[in-house]
Amino acid sequence: MPATSRRLRLTALPLLLAILSATVVLTVGSAGASTADLSTASARTTSVINTGDGTLQRRERRIRNAVQVARNQIGDPYVYGAAGPGAFDCSGLTMYAYAKAGVRLPRSSDAQAGAVRRVKRSNLHSGDLMFFTSGGSVYHVGIFLKRRGGRPIILHSSYSGRPVQRDPVWTNNWFAGTLRPR
Image 1 (cartoon, rainbow, N blue to C red):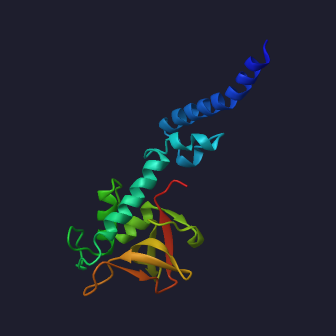
Image 2: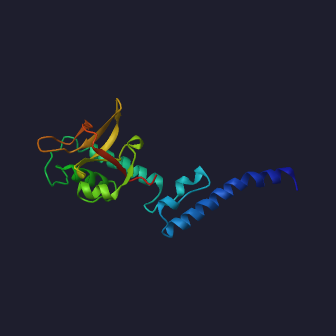
Image 3: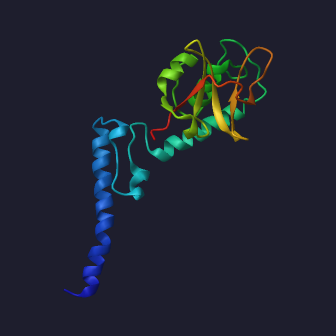
């Protein structure tokens, strides 16, 4: 057997294994496996992993789009019970922004808290949700944007008389949730 033929087969083997791994992952994923069960042998296959809600890239794009939709609402008034367009309460803003990006969220902040996967504060990414609590109950939700001087900045609709806006977080009584399959 010529040396070039052996080299070609040896270099093609990792690619073949990656393709087979992706096929197995997609088959397992479509059979109802949880996203926690999905893994790959190669980082190159992450673009085709089925998470149940589409590809990882599609989910990331939807989250970025939701953040942009929410940013476009800056200046809109707070109205209790409103879910846009043109006026929002806190959970109405998050529900509206994510719905426009193709992601369903429940209506209330408490129900939204139950629909996300909790993440450590140190693992927040733009588009994750921050839930504010008092006495063990969720009373407010906002969209995490970034950190400034170590403090989280959120986009939210807080209360009557204040429009949708960006604010630094004012309390330590909060937890974070994500819609990413991480």
